[in-house]
Figure 1 (cartoon, rainbow, N blue to C red):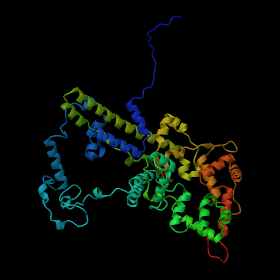
Figure 2: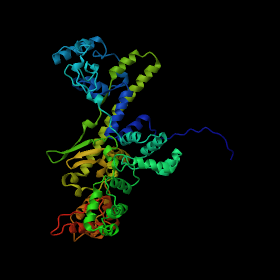
Figure 3: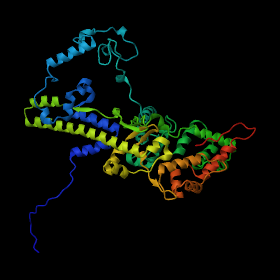
Figure 4: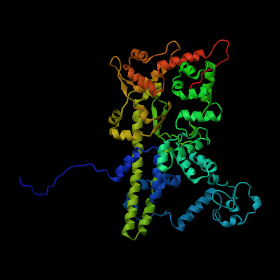
Length: 532
């Protein structure tokens, strides 16, 4: 068969993700803080957008706001309205209404003659670091009764690297050693530990490893105590040396921290060659140290969790699911401004720019509305499915997956997954991430209704918290009790759930309870083994 070129016409269907559709998908998975940052960027970039609170309540409730939300670009670019923003007549009307409402005259509100051009130096409080001009009518302060803008003088928060850099400049004179010390400081993480090997730093800087090790010793002498350590044992050893408590017995204790974590005090007494009372004092000394020296400086600003949905009980016994309006940014499309700009546009490029900005603004407002409706729909279905949890607690949490919610509300699983990511729900039981309500199912022993994995974890925690000194439950014993409660679960699953709850094994718990019981003896003073 001869090969030849042919023109073939084929008809097919395909899904094309437009930039607007990609934006709507991206908005779904944004958290409230990420959404606020995104909207702020759009407000700066797109002149056709404005904040919803920039207009008064009368305009928001009036017909103009409805026109902004629903009119098309062609209708918006028609004849100008009488209440146009620009023009001296419109400003005069607004000024008269403001003066009538406030009962004061606004004509001289911003005249420079209100405040004398010169202010005597005696009138300025000493020690504030402010010049006379700062008190003579600048924004945020003045002699008209308003307080100065103190936020303009707030110092930036000092980081751990900045704090160590100041000490390095005072302790080291040689420029090469300063360069090595700064490289070591840059490798220290937020907890205060060195995150790079000495050899790697030496190769990167092209210097001798012994010189880097000497500079590391200098950095480790800085405040906070223990900074620059390579592991927990070295961090504790640095602090103990500074406290003059690093004797041979303490050195052996620090070298055997895994035994201390397992609370194997009998082995530690043999290794350290001390009695029980001395070991208790040594463990107490370890407990008073700081395992993360950089923790005092923090790891940056902490964003508070803002609920996207609130759930509260209604008078008829049902649940009211509402969107948190404080977490929803309000943006409006300024169609009147777009019409004004379009009338003044002379070139095709200007008209295209205005039309593109107006189209993007309309799409953003519609995407935000669709995002809010989708979150409310998903949250309502979650509340309906997990009604028993809201009434009775974690033990009654039902197994739930994304597919069940998606089928109930007629959406795709990926959409539900995006909606529930980084979204939080405030309930009478507390603040929960929406993903919390989706748990795996564990079969019942008699083949009946399945149990939620989170509810099973809660049962395991309750069993272990209620065990006595003489009856420490092993994983097999927990499996037997769960099967008695109609929960079919394997021993390795119980061990996995127990480890996820950070609960030690039965052997470690039995040893811990035994030492707690032995810590109190008749006739002796109360001595407690401090747990690390």
